[in-house]
Image (cartoon, rainbow, N blue to C red; front, side, top):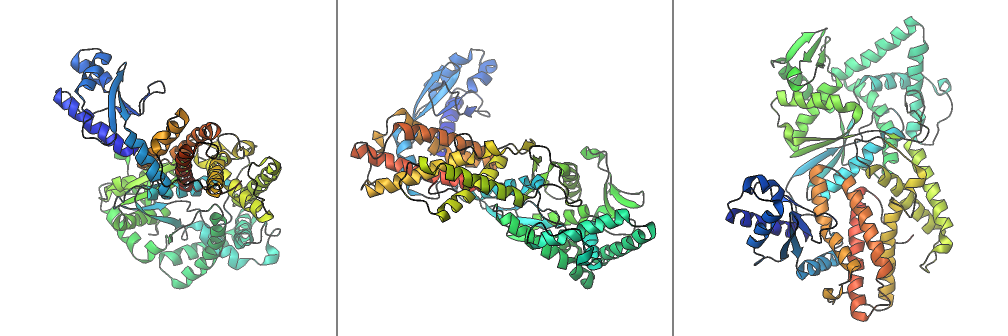
Length: 587
């Protein structure tokens, strides 16, 4: 309802300004300061002070006097407070919010935009297990995709597989060269990527330690693999993909634990073999930005603000990762209305150069949007290196999260209010939901550009601003609904007007805002805004929970409150769903 109310406010305010011969280009409609008792307010009087030549409070009064609320469903009254024009809702606003949110388990989903969006995220090189430092990419990427889907877009989730670079050629050579007895240690886990990464590490160690003639011989074999891929040799491709697909299969199992799942794994060799990369390189050569320097074709991007040139073709006429990624992006533009990419901060320069090159090629780069994130650190500053075999893996983090969550759940068993008995399977389920939810929420709730340090005590705090705190709200809602059903309370035929306490009205207000929060967060590609909404929602609900009983209220009030609890359940479940956090029915 909030979105519709905002539209009515903007329409009424524009009409009033027009009738006063005042500009309507910036309405200044926003949620008011805490001390302003309105659903929306306009600060337009500040902007117009210089135009009108009067004090903002006087201008606000004149504008409010000119606004008519006739003919609107949700705009009920207008007044002023200082320089603000305040807009108040009708009872129908609350009535319709309660009806929609209580009855619709998909509450918050926006109408279809008609846009197709591809969200590319994670795309870690298939060289071994996923480590903690890269965890932010799949968590943010999955949340961005969920958010865009809730906002009415047709979304596909892609993982771009680097299967043509030197790392994979080296990996393939090492896998074919060394035997099990040549490798160091046993696999850290019984999964394929933990087994095969030992070959990758062995290959790197060999090149660093071998005598020069032996190292050169190995490099020749690695180069031959790269050239075979460049030439489209099917045997070479099969050799490389034998390694890539095995490692990627294990990585997928890890990512599914988050969960982060993909509609398509797009391999960069695809754009080498279909001729797109060669065609793109030829087109770049013909542009005024192309130069041949230092035995390579490059783009001079000074006009775009980049001092460093972009190399797109080597002296031996072989392509680079960036060249193939340019072809990949043009393929995206051909098939989707929007292309969103989630990238680590170390790719920021590359992303800017890629956008510039795409613009030079005549593409509509407005279709390309990037979400840049910084790293996740653990206390103590552990380093992360797949090549050297150091650092903490995502599997380790998830196992630890589940184990710690299980301890918390078991410790709280005696303090549970609900009288349902939890089985061992229930405890394991809750531990998984809470543990993994804690990891995801702690990561996605922070602004992506800021580096974060994962703190266990904060992430698993059931009482503070964390996933368990919000998940508890959903569990409480489910418990209240179950108890009310058992008591025979019917929430189908209710009178919303009996919800007149401050706690009830505050909860209705935040429920009504949910679709608008989705719309705004999707426009800005900021899933952390939904994390903030979910936390604030939990605080408002808990105040309602403490002050407004369902079971002990008068029948008419209890029924209306039950509907509000159902509306809250749907709201928090869908907010958590966007973040990729499960909503437990019991805790």
